[in-house]
Length: 277
Image 1 (spheres, one colour):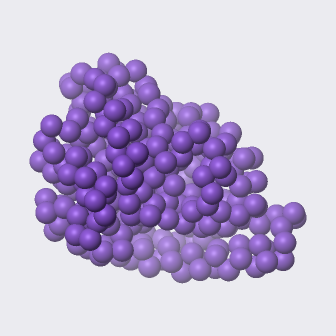
Image 2 (cartoon, rainbow, N blue to C red):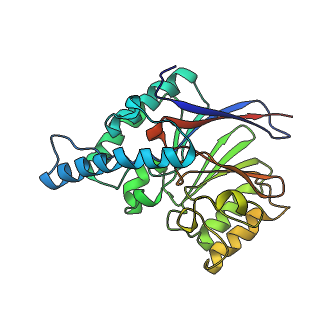
């Protein structure tokens, strides 16, 4: 395998699953593209962002004990091409990107995504991150009519994606989450920003307040979301996230696992196998 990649593999058993499913979980590419149709300002921004992340990826690597060397020092759009090639080789059932696919929403970034994302042979799911912010209409070509909540079904398995990029969950999102998660399916939840609870505080304290959502200071709807997903009766038992640029696994409630992915700029990603009992 290309030495660029630093993949981690995880198996989760889901009683009642009809067969094994394989997910490729990636996050935080921070695409900052420029092309011949760019304005001078867009070109300057793309170059500045690329240079900034050449330093930033090293800082995150040191924080999480990941390796960074010359194989990782390539243009940001080069990471996306590498992940396309890998995904088409290992053939997951779904590629799931938990946010910050772009450094920010720009015309050249959108042109790049429209060209490159169709190269994935498996379905590509993407939930917004804090850097992906833009008008909801701009995301419809990639996320369907409701980027704030998305649903993708594979047999009995249901992937539910919620946009928590502003560290909040709305009442509408929570209502849709409850409806989708409680219809007898086997739900997996995905969002950009991980949560921090009393149960996983010792693990998530490593990354600090900026990188997590907690009940403390949360608006009422977000607090209600946290109370729902941590409740024993909630059918969701696996929550996939990004944002922290490192791989962290924790129990956010009894029997409920939260997993984040190393930044794909570092070649990091998770191969997740969901297994029937």
